Image 1 (cartoon, rainbow, N blue to C red):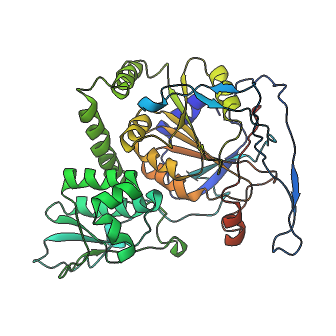
Image 2 (image 1 turned 180 degrees about the vertical axis):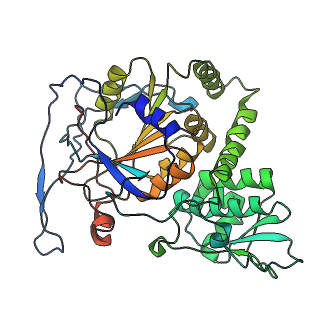
Amino acid sequence: MTAETMATNATTTNAKSSGMTVTNNLSDASITNRNATRTIATKEINANQEHTHTQHIDVATNNSSDTDKNISTTTTNDQQNQTKMSSPVLCTEIEGTALVHAYNDDDSYPKTAPAFVPLSTLVRGLKNPSKNDTAAVCNYHCNIHFPHFMQEIIRCFSFGRSRPDLTPVLLVQRHQWSRFLLNPTALKEKSRFIYGIVEGLKQAIGLQIVKTYDGASVTMQTFLEKDHIVSPYSMRSRQDAIELRDIFVHMMTNQSSSSSSPSNLLKKEKKGHDQNKDESLQITFINRGDQKRSILNADGILTTLQEAFPQHQVVLQYFEDSSFEEQIELYSQSDVVIAPHGAQLTGIMFMPPCGAVLELFPHLYHTPYFFSSLANISGLVHASWYVSIDSEVPLPNSLDIHTRLNSTMNNICPTLNR
């Protein structure tokens, strides 16, 4: 499936809360075989462990010779405008399994919980609200980690939009969370991304964050993923998701409209690019630079994408030093996003509707329903690629928690010839 096809299919596919289908094609383009040096490393897992088998382990080789190679990188951060340097990385290129597409009509994969749910499912006490209510109160119960924070926030946003007459309130009772969410300075130091969302919602919809609140008859339900009542990311409607996206995209546009920064210059380039939307797409390849669930052969993939899609703009981005605003801006300009599983994919909610996302998973770690549900409510096509020596995609929950936790930071080395 080409990048154009992934993006185009999104305009004709109604994402539904159903099964998942499997396809083998990633690109119709012919990719030239590269005579790259490859190393194969294997590791025998201790026979006393619960799961015993031989697995390939990706190995990053630090090369201190003069063969260091530039990775072509596009970024909106002043400090990152210089070319990012990377030593050549030798790793075992893995074909991986077929691509898995979530939320299609095919029944070949088990059903998942719905992404769009009635407000009565999200909210407690909706049938008998008090006439004295002045607030739409959401109970916050997640840790301070961007993807899980947004799971709570988007549900609360749906609730608040359903009752515009009430003040949106985030009730954070536990000290381990309130000490950050009630302290902007501490929150910004802990997570500049959550800080950006909180401050943006305070400004846009008057969100209040409190530790105690008495008298609310209508409050937000709390859900655990294991309950399978709603999908990991769920809202009342796609319109709510679009409104939430627009708040931040428009906020970033207003902030940079009078600026001559590189960020604003990139926006101007994109504006011209949008006028030729049918002819040119922006394909954004995001990698993690900390060697934890990183794509080891990122430079090779970047070259492959640029050669396969010369008519499109292909950029490689590392987010470690990017601001919240820069990430939103980049996502809002991206038609196709390719990235390993990780917190950075929370930003797909800021992509334009009808875009496409390809999420890569390492060996023994596969959770395709998490960000696919965010893609679904955002109007995006989502496909996952399990880059493993295993011949089949694992069924949901077939990898036990012990195996997944031990494998969560496995690096990824996908084949360049797919």
